[in-house]
Length: 383
Image 1 (cartoon, rainbow, N blue to C red):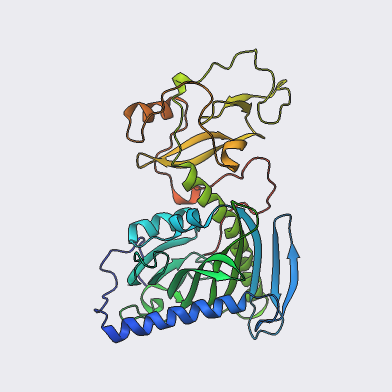
Image 2: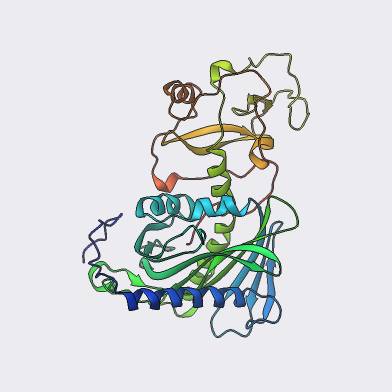
């Protein structure tokens, strides 16, 4: 049996041209998916009887009691605005979609926009519908469980819920001409996204969104007995971890647009600065470093972190303090020259402090937790 090489080439699927009736049918289906998604996320007076399953310091998870299949709803809060969320997730090209997927959900090995059904327009810049295909690694890949692929509609839209603006990404499987099952040729099992997606809802606190995530996925194949239940549990747990990665990807995208100080313009780490400028604790024997945005001298571990960002089209790792990475950063307090993204000197400055990292293997990809915030979710796993 052939091995599926990823990413797939652009002509892997032979897609027929969509006629007007097909487009209208897909558009209607997308709006139906969105309506069902919103209804299912209602904790009260909705079609699902939700019961509390688990809680962490940041996330609450519910499980549906009256559903024929296991369905889960997770809720948490993230630091972001709707505009920041939309700017990250509204990717209409295959290249941009693949890049986002590698950062957001590393076990999704490839994702392709098959057809753009409804593009953002000036009169409704947030409505976007697309037909997609993706392939996903699974727990115990090849030893026990085959890869899964999914063919589905993704509906993005800004709506209003109880007087609050919300951005939804609702997904549901649908058959698409030219996208056959790959099980007999590449040993990849076609799964079903029954109800799946994310909703970002504005809260009373500016810059804070409530993130709701719905999960009802059929992995199909031989998923019976104790092994099947264990694998499903792993898949659901991985989905919870995606909530944490969501905030990290959005924040990293925002931080990538900041200006950073050349290492040669940073003040020297002299002995005079004995306290961290974030936590105000004495350094003692602890290492100290500097924020590349505000130039504050801070703790290496607790009050700063290296973020994987994109500058001048290249991956870089930049040390940013907790204050700048968790709120709207201010201009540097010292008088420095801020290089542009295309500056050769900027790229040299990044390498001089070992912040630059070339293209890395996707399996090594990680986004660090924001300093000062506890979160048990550390690594994206599923979808």
